[in-house]
Image (cartoon, rainbow, N blue to C red; front, top):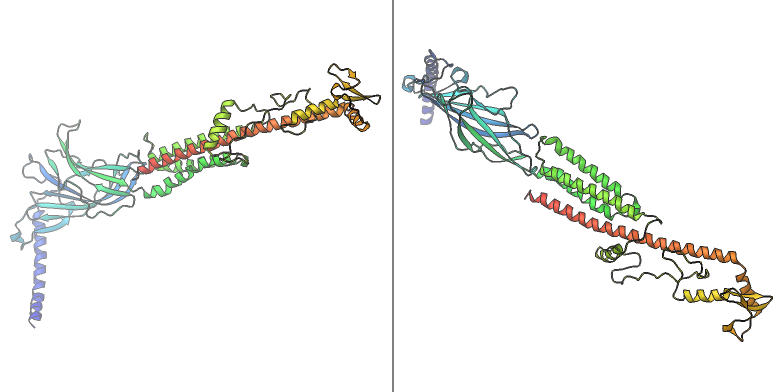
Length: 500
């Protein structure tokens, strides 16, 4: 019951109180602005400077345009000053100590953003000001600012930027308005996190500058917004694909030369990296500072270009024809013996445990270019350790001839003797004589056999020479493959080290 009585009492008093507060507010508004002008600086002594306290709260980073070097941010700007003509005794107005009126009715300092890049010059929003009985005016206004920011993309995407927001009076000098910073740093308590940029701090500093046009000092307050880029997006969308593509370049050396796709692989990888390079170039300012990822792309593209050129050179070695010269001795010793073991390049039937086979010695009577001498007997059709002795025996037998059914021996001078001094006492049977007679009277058949033998030997020498060049090309492929793998690995580690 007692509570109901108190509530009924307050309800009966409240309608009388509220109209009284409203009447005093209207009366105060009328009394304050009777002879007030918002065009003049509200100070009693015009020789004294008016102090304006500035406080900036960063609410959100809307956009960072690196190409145009413009930072768009959402700020809350608070300005506090004292107006000598807007004071009253709060006892005369029923204890009314503050009023809120439109900011256009009072004098406001013309504090602007010096490095503004806004093409519309919209400025701050027209909000109310809070006037206290002692003449203090507090003006809180939100603003979307576009400020010029010098962007350094040398370490993109692991870069950090420092964007400055400089506030100062446009027409009043330091003898008329003195700007003070309320805090040593910008307020970040209500900051909305940005997905791309991390704010490390926003220190504030007051500067007093004397410009060349005027002798009076002009104070300003500069807020330095320290930003660090969140590189996760660029790592997964620009960097890792490039790293994976660059590892395909050394594999072009491992691709068999007969496949016909070695050069095509290098050109395809080069075109893919060119596309990524264009994506980075579109978002970066056209400055002399090449981004870190751009340097990585250029280095990788240069490496792939070099690998493609080397691939063409090695393929030319692999596909050298029969007219190729023999492999030099230093190449046989250094490439075919030592490097082939280091890079595990072996022919069919070879292994790393078997010693290398000694090169075959050319048969007697064979020249170095693979052609046989005319004196060599053409009956040698198989290779082996007894090939020379067999050839000599057949030659001796072919030089036998039967003349009028009798045994005859052809001496080196060309004369036929009646008997062989080495075969004295032995006779010549009819079957043996007919066989020797057949051989010695078929000169054309002997020439054909000799030509076939020479062709076969020349073909074997050409195949051996071509096989050696193919092995040289294969060893060079393996060598350059590991060299380029190491280069790609170290390049990738260097750029990934910037992210740690």
